[in-house]
Length: 234
Image 1 (cartoon, one colour):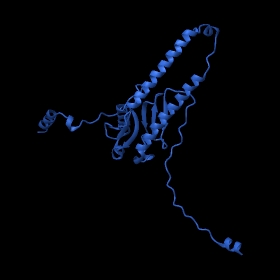
Image 2 (cartoon, helix red, strand yellow; image 1 turned 120 degrees about the horizontal axis):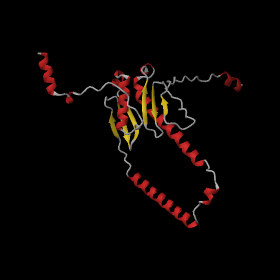
Image 3 (cartoon, helix red, strand yellow; image 1 turned 135 degrees about the vertical axis):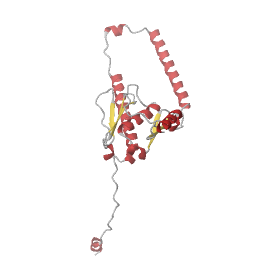
Image 4 (cartoon, one colour; image 1 turned 90 degrees about the vertical axis):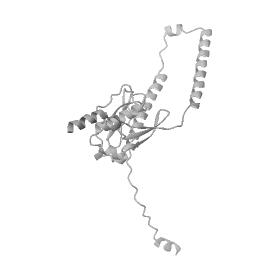
């Protein structure tokens, strides 16, 4: 009897609110071998960051139609994540390459075996290596004590983005969406290149994009030039 009553009961229906879709980029694909440059893109394929093996920026590429695929409000986050992906790709591939080189055994020849030092020389070399390692550890501890937790804000020349830098690393990025929405692609790429360069995050092998020169501010204009302009208008 109880079983029939339980079977006739209707379980409560759960109506969960819909979850908004989030723009997620797939994990970056790692190259199979070390390279001179590493490239990462955002999920919308609107911007690309290319870095050298040390993670320094070589170039920024922004699609001419990026605003049709990437909301302006998401540009700052997309740029930050794309930059971090490029740096992560370079660091991962280069670290694996160094590990592979260390694990690759060198062939042993009679010449290399016969040229090995005697016991006293070998012990002296070991003591020297230990001394070097100790000195490096002491320097590392001293450098750790000098690490600053202060964050420096660097504003780009056109005012499109502001970088937050701590100990030479990018820890944050904010974008002026109103200004970015009105900026041309060349101006945007130039602005990014200059502010990342000011932060020490660009490579010496990188090439600055070509863009129209920035307009001088009123403070930089020559008052005598304004005077001649006024006389010419009379």
